[in-house]
Image (cartoon, rainbow, N blue to C red; front, side, top):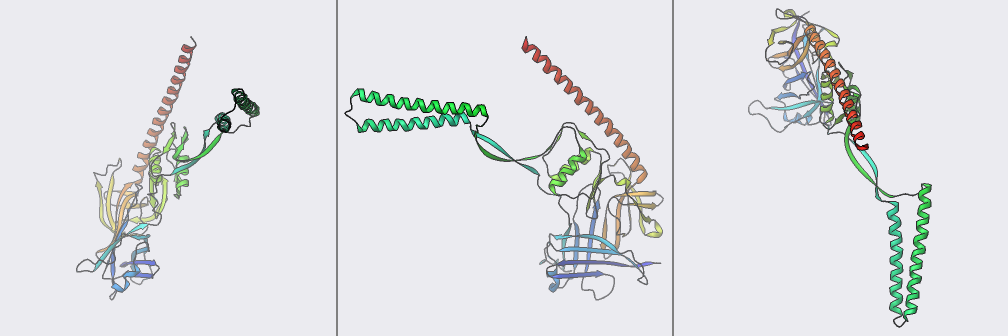
Length: 414
């Protein structure tokens, strides 16, 4: 079987309908397209870039921001019976400038973002409604008595104004009567207040206060619980999660950043990669992913031999290589490589699919699976030791603090 014919297709669907453009080396195509589709395992999501050439203006309304975009690519045999064609991209169009054609070749470009691009959600805050006491029951009692006294004072002044010729004896008698009423009213109210207080029936005047605070987690909460809670509240779907090391946060945790940023930070503390594969989010050791049936070597499409990358910054040597496009390749995929530089099972760390008039190629940065697993084992062991040391220190600090408080209390008694 010889896969000799390149094939790539872009399909765009929206309110206008469906537009299909096929690059298959056949004449009379309505247009052609190129695409660069990146992938990685560092948790970031890079948009794919698509360029369309010579599309008739009458069809440009089929391409708009927000429309769904699908790209398929691969190779087909001479008879057409066999092929490696598969989906390499699915997402939504953004950044489109449909009315602009580049001079000469009538081209325009846009970005395709993954469907589940929910990595930029704002900080998640928990709504808390509390009752705040505005006036105490005792203060309310005092205000009631004062109000009654003011009423009687007004009544007394009105009586004096209406009786300007009243003898002093009559005025004194009237003032005593007013004062008696005040004392009687206050005495009755205070007696009632004491009985209600003893019976626990007194209620202070309160008002509801709404506040929004970041999600907080208690001391000793494990990383897995924190990640799941943040993801649930922020509606971030995790397709697979298994932490390399489920760290205990001895001082608790406050999610004061964007949810996805917080999730990545916690996963890093738990020595676990966060990555996207086929538009799905995973938080797990991709070194333990299932091996594919893909074998790459000279006879199966290897076009550029693996070259070690000295500036990768990784503890494990990374190699860059290029081969004929394989739709199944994505970040975290494990396949078999055979070359003079490296032979064995390898893990894809990052790379991109390239669809152009020059060909269909996949370029990847890979690491040896066995070397990666050995490095991860050391990392996990070091993390456990560091966490045990931090826990012991926290216990010791708490013990010292308790002893200091006891000592201070003893001094006060003296």
